[in-house]
Image (cartoon, rainbow, N blue to C red):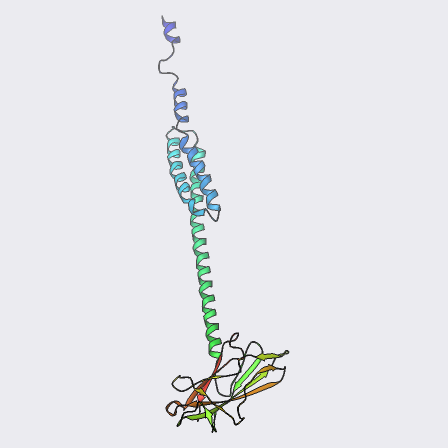
Length: 262
């Protein structure tokens, strides 16, 4: 009777076997933490996808801490996996944060560079615009090598002239064009435009005195061409004029000369 009792199997089974089996059934947290940690690190190292790494990395740390807790309580045997998941999850979060910092820095640098470029372009355009506004007697060289100078206007006494109203003041505008380049250059638009002191267009005088000359044709290298033009100004706006001229209005922006007519 005693022998039968000693040899009879325990109805609850072996305690160590039961504990081992139960621990294995709880290893999922550590495995999940390790997998998520690897995913978080890989995504964090990819420049384009770093912003996706924070979620799997965070989950890896959460599952990893749960897995470590289960291992400490004897309900899991893969403590190393859980710990690796925590470490990789932390690395993934750092990679996500680093990627965010790098991206923000790069975007800021690009934005600053773009602003600097726009500012430089605006400054250059402003300087170029300012350079095209001159006083009488000053010279402006166009990109085709033609150096243009508009002399101070002189009083002009017309004979029988078209476009000269009674009481108006007539002035003569002299334009000199010098070819500073090495090839001949054609002057496409040899007529200047003149505005009076109020900004209105002045009338071009045409008479038969032969004193006026229009610049036309080619200007050879090192040579100059001189044009002389007369304009009629109303008496109340004749004290100051602005002369606008370009050797090729279709290609080059006009330059402007202004000042008193005396």
